[in-house]
Length: 505
Image (cartoon, rainbow, N blue to C red; front, side, top):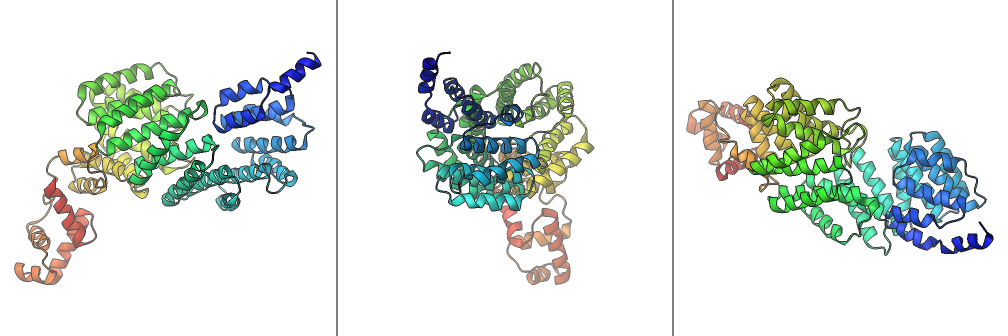
């Protein structure tokens, strides 16, 4: 190639345009623009930036490791990217060496210095060194760049979830989204991740203000190919939020949209099982049957061993949905899921996150219950219920308690389900609990306990109840303590509220 042609190619590359497209998460366009860059070293580093965002950690290491840029700034940028990539391949020693070298050479306060700090904090997080990660990330929360401050808060939210501090996690995600909304050129990669995670939390917890915030931000984001998965997941989660609010029509619309956005056929199966599951639980049996079989036809022609995230949960949902219609297929899907090397990984989870066990145990337990494996089902559902309750995932706890009631016949589980689902009174879960039949609040009480309960609900004191029944206050106190244990409450107010709820239902 002649010198004139090389100069012409260099003139065509617009690095400012590349940076804008990179922040917009349009990675195919980034690669197209890089085809116009004649500087091989610069092209390698900028390509590695895209590779990192697309999680191609192994692929980017070899080209960068052999690269020796003459430009000192480019060498720093190479070390930062290598450090970040080595961290994601669990080579933490090499990762820290590269990042420390970059920090020594980068000018304090520069963008490269901020990058090196962020990725050092990220590597510390990957190593589960949360205090170190938090200390480093906190220094970036006052950085001049809103994008740098936002991604620091995203990382702090990841630390919070490892500590099971959901309130802090939500707090940091909201701050990150506020910061990204305040800059003309937001880093859409981190905005998509923060938005997806806040949507997921708003699905699991009663967070109506945050859910509305997600809807508003979602409508303003200019989605690009690099955030397709996050867009798909956000739409799914918003659909489930609609369903839990009793707006099934909006939920079905969201699931149809998600199906069209699915980044792979595996994810499309998941969106189809969403529709089938909701349709079955809202009485749309014919529609549920048709969509379920569409999902089955697609799922059976896919290899699931190449997947490793939430899309795998569709196998469990298929097992649960087929348990009554086709037990053989249900058992097949359970066995297929168990054959995978790793379990479901959720968008907000970490390697040993108990929530991943809970999601698996809940769906598996409900399927096994329908398949007649009652003892194993009770073990799995009990484990799932305990974990969901620890994370205050109320409606999921309610589903487990409802299934445990069906498995054991114990009225206390139904009482627990009713209490747990209270923040979602319009949901299909609440309707299913109410439709289960008379909750049998008094079914297991002795005649003496019933008498105490009736007077307690009238607002009488222990002394007055004792006089009315001709019993000692000590005996009445013991009966009331047993009532609290039976119904899983800790005071008179909760017990009275439980019976008021029952009468309304």
